[in-house]
Image (cartoon, rainbow, N blue to C red):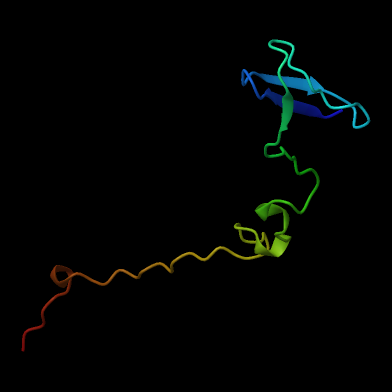
Length: 92
């Protein structure tokens, strides 16, 4: 059952009432006897199920982590070059 909010036109007091759609609207303020009017506001909604959020529409191929079958690339080892002190100079 929906919850309706009413505001008194005389004293501006707000009243909430849980009513069926078929129930008549409240018309008299209990505090001062003034006229009540329905207050309309934004409706709260809840999205349930899949497809409503950004990450719901992504497939397995577009995920942030690479697939397990892709080999990891590592840099090749660098061969050490001989240092100049280890080479012997030849004399002629």
